[in-house]
Image 1 (tube, one colour):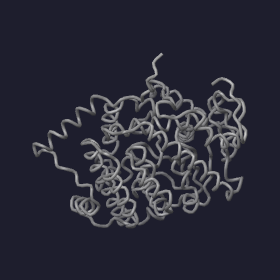
Image 2 (tube, rainbow, N blue to C red; image 1 turned 180 degrees about the horizontal axis):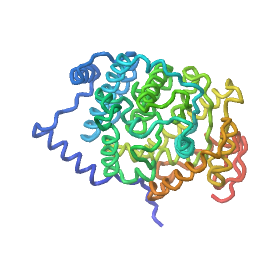
Image 3 (cartoon, rainbow, N blue to C red; image 1 turned 45 degrees about the vertical axis):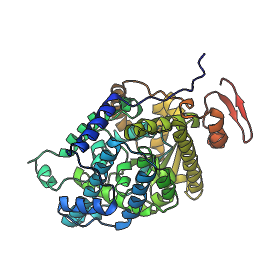
Image 4 (cartoon, helix red, strand yellow; image 1 turned 90 degrees about the horizontal axis):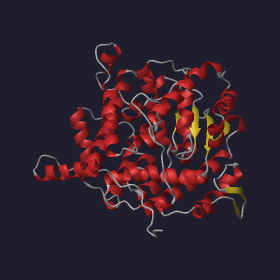
Length: 436
């Protein structure tokens, strides 16, 4: 038997080819050198958009910290630097366009967001499945994938509403997804999606240069730790305004409750509840061995696109730390939330009996489940088509062991009765191993 350590997947030849082409283009003067500096990005984007109102300038501080982390620790390759430049310009353009729309249509900001349903759980804990099951019910509002990529309509969107033009955002999303699948064929296994599939609002928080989206894409742990020490309220206020804009662009009733979810909420529950005090919270729980391994795999498959120096062991340690922090902050915040405002859902219960579990959720929400069953079944059929292959990963690929994970997250599993594969019981001071 080989004693070689288990290695995570390598990046694709497609990315190696793209990286070589960008480098060659720079040498030939055909591809501009990215300038990842705050003032240069702000000025260039404003000039290209012909606008200068970025809204609340709070976002500039996390932007500065993120840019500093990109320079000091991300080790971006040519593809990474090129992509980062485009991403910053896209977010900044969306901020300019958002302020333009708020000025044109002040009624957008008056749209209420009443009693949103917010799914809160660690990365890879079944939040996507629960979110999409609920989103299949037309009595709720949800964001589509193209809207988290491009939450703000283009300046000609009134022509789209009048039927004179096609909305370019789904077209752009389809192109981005096609490139993403070439860059990383495992994308469909890790997070199956399409331009019109229900999607989380992490892209709306990224509009304030905030959130774990950046940490799952680049090695920017200094930025992540900085965010952990700051209040997220300004980012959530801007997210709420973008939700209002998306609801307006969808031309749907503001009385329909929003279905929201992103693992970022685990870290930011106080900010979430300050902005959405009447939110109804659905907490998802899954075997921490699976959560940590799957989260590390997701981040790895993104990071290797943008850097030639990704370290799987370092990444594994970081996502174990991040998952532990998510759980600690979630548990601390729950102490002040009325019980009638929350419900817990186990990943394994959804696996065994999705319909019975969803009945519990609908009872909690005060909705009749029967009108939603047909849509949920259609989603489950569609999701089987989207997901071509199972997502495979191991803790060992990222330098972790089950013992390390459970030493830090075993008490969480015990407190919430979360089944852990290979372990019969989890006590405060011991693990009873059955099949590991």
